[in-house]
Length: 511
Image (cartoon, rainbow, N blue to C red; front, side):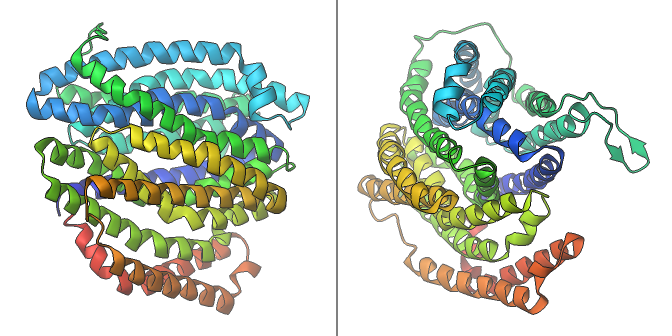
């Protein structure tokens, strides 16, 4: 296996473990809290999540990795860590200032931007939860960059474990911090704090601490030593900020999807916000395991190819990544859509919310391939230290296309319309970026035959799942029997799909 395929496998394995814990968390959430509480919690997370993505996570990490890779290649690790320290300190200060402003203006943010359709009581609770959640964002301002620093050094194990521990912290918040009576775990009754939905937020804060703590040994192993320095005028900091500015705005446009989604959903009745969030979570399971894992692993290598001026290696790596995404996401989307009902049933949501979650999951899955390809397309531009092109694409997509589509389709099709607008918009953005990338790196796309085989694979896999469901009447079952039969149907669907895309899967190990 190549370095990229090994790294992708490591990331995907731990992302898979993370999703198992995340599913356990979602099941516990569905059983511990009411639909009304969940609507409030999910809406309250919008702005803190936005701040996390913009400052401490995705935006700054993606802007930092190409420059750190250049420093490691040309100047050595000591200078790279010096740059990393300056960016880390700057991010922590800026995050603190932004968190303070959000805390001050939480009331108008909730009342007029996030959830105008909520009742007064739900708005008041959302304001409390939003302010409390900002503590976790301060921790993520450090831990998010720690992930970028380790990934730039081609170390992916500890950053992949960190999200698992984040979910562990949230589970602790659910089973220990929240209940009035201690959770019964076999013969042992766990202690409890009786904090209700607030306990879930304390679990988020605790999980963020675990997310950071697991990465500290890796930073120390690679020679990182913190120093109280800023040096905004240094060359490396200016280069990171030049990439960061457009990336921050790009991520803001991406987060706009969630703001618009919950704003519109809050007007559709109780359970709509929760149903859409669960649907998004389900679609994100395969998207994270395939698109995110591969894109994270491929970014440092693409950046190295660009720094060395090796266009042929850049094109080969990029094309194999695209082929892998197509071969995996197209059949998985179809298989998952056909067999998703038993998976969502085990969460234990109210029946009408379960129906909404199943519907939104299936519609979101239409855009699974577009989401995964967008991960690679955007990082291809960042690897070339071009942050403006993804910015323009995100603006056209989020502010113009998605906002209009979501508003129109939600009025006609409700929750399904909002999910459909998302699937359409992200797919169009991915295609747009690849068309623009082809002008910079001509003839990189050689995946036409993969598309045909992926479609045949999807038909075979989903057909097998539907056949098993009909033969066993899985939807008429309940409890563990439904889960086991549903999992068996999904597995049969995967085996039916594999022969059509086996060549691309074998090639993935040599990417």
